[in-house]
Length: 263
Image (cartoon, rainbow, N blue to C red; front, side, top):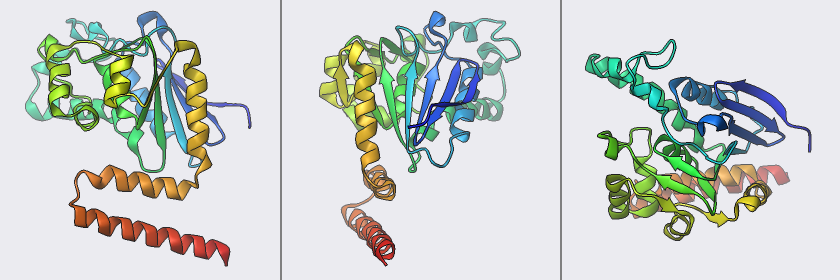
């Protein structure tokens, strides 16, 4: 193993790369890693900066909380320095408001690329945008003190940072509706039981658990993982027959690649 290379460190986001593993760290523990448009742009830049050699991306956060959600300064008249306040955005024309929200969503979309597997290591509070950032990843390993909550509805808003689809896929419509509409906390035991978390461990074991999972993911040939991920991602939107067809096509590609490698 080589030593980690620092690729990016700005606006509360640090990206380091060590061989086939990239680590994206939220680095503002004093504010419980509250999120802002600048942080979202840094996350987008992190995704665009990944070397082609990276197979696994770990998302983690410094401090006691993964992310307490959107920084409430967004809702003040002054907003953030150099940024339009959310109150000003609310008064913009529909096309402009839609474009701004779409830009914010980009920070949450690249984690499910087929060429990588992303793991969120979550401790403490993961509220609102923090919950949705954890949901943006393929897999979640959580500490026993984790507290997920979707508070947007309680504030008169909706979860709009791509979290609704993975939440429904993981826990089902009825439970997802109840979690969002009530804004209640989901703790580690429930998260693991319902599939929201792949694994729940004591806080002191979180880093080791993520390392073990990362090693297991890297043990399989990369192209096989990529093909399998694409099959699973598309399964919900395909008919049974279409999924059979997709499986055959993927397996044919794998067999041809293996045969070519043995020549």
